[in-house]
Amino acid sequence: MAAAAAAAGPLSGPVSVLESYRGRDRVVRTVAYACQLAGGILVAKKGRLATESPLGRGLLTASAQLSHCRTVLRLFDDLSMLAYSCQYGLGKKEEDVAVRWLSVAGNVADQLYYPCEHVAWAADAGILAADSGRWWALSTALWAASLLLGTIRSLRILSRLRRSQRREPASGDAARKTRARAKAEALTVLGHLADLCNAIHWMPPGWLWAGRFPPWLVGLLGSVSSLLGIYLTYAGATEATGSVE
Image 1 (tube, helix red, strand yellow):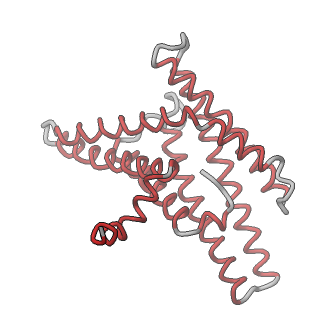
Image 2 (cartoon, one colour):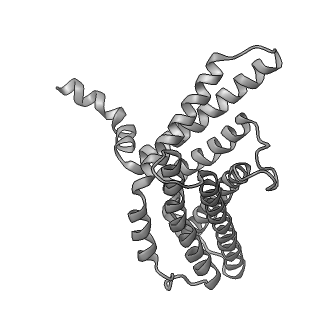
């Protein structure tokens, strides 16, 4: 028993992450994009040699299945998103009006995203008689809008932090907190832009670079945003931003 307890020590962190819904979702997301990155590289490499890569195709299939798993689990996310939106409300506690309304608009986009994705999933499953392609495009557009609003919000906060620091330079603990929040917002912008590139790729043909990314590039961008999301969450930076995915 003592040996089992000692062995459980090093695993307590990963286990606690995997036992929470959000933690497991982040891990599944990261693994899915990592599989797409590795599979895409193998397929592209073998493609140049005019040979098939069973491992590459297998990794791409695993990535698609993991992504589908996350889609199914998001069928139950509406209430948690609604609870967050209601808690934030119109953002009256925000000091900056622009940040306030960017956050509200982002929450609206996020709230609408879920039912649109549910309809697309139900159409693919044959539950609803609807054009799933249109609903997938709409849900992707809402996701892209949320990412764009989140990016602008973080850039606005960064700008305010820099102006505030120039007017009244902070020191000690206050300066440390300001640097931590600025770092978190900068990483949030980078993660949002990586996801936004993928969101546009998944839009219908004719939208900028829609459909033009090879699988490995989609995997790379998704892996970057996933790892940044894990860092922001479990390194304590998310608390500094006050934002959620």
